[in-house]
Length: 121
Image (cartoon, rainbow, N blue to C red; front, side, top):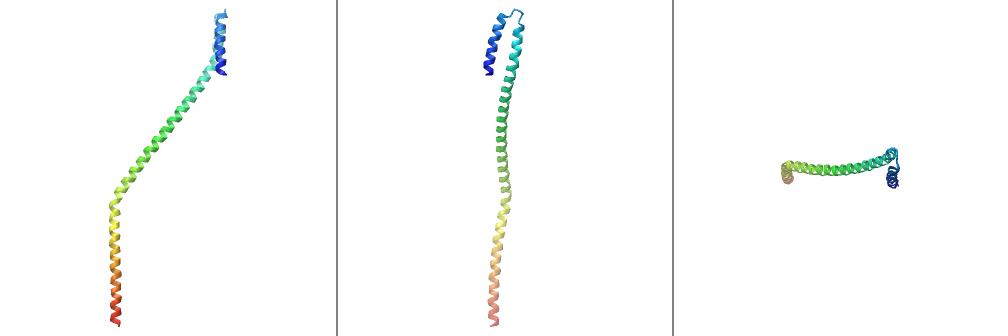
C-alpha cells in the first residue's frame, strides 16, 4: 500500500512538475512529503536487515565458541587421563600386592590354627 502510494506520488510529482508554473514549489513540497514516507520505510527495512544479520552472526559465533570449548575440554580431559595413567597402574599393582599379602596372611593364620589344634590334642 505504501509503495502504491509512493508510485502514485511519483506520478503526481511528474504531473505537478509539468503543470507547475511557480518554479517547482509544488514539486519540492511533493518530494518532501514523499521523503517523509520513503525514508522511514527504507530505514525500517535496513534496521530489520541489520537485525537479521546480527542474529545470524551471533548464532554463528555461539556455534563456533561452543565447538572450540568442546575441543578444549576434550583436550584437557585427555591430558588429565594421560597424567593419571601411571598412578592408576601403580595403584592396581599395589592392590594386587595387598591381595596377595592378605591371602598369604589368611593361609598363615589357617596353618597356625592347624598347628595349635595339633599341639593341644
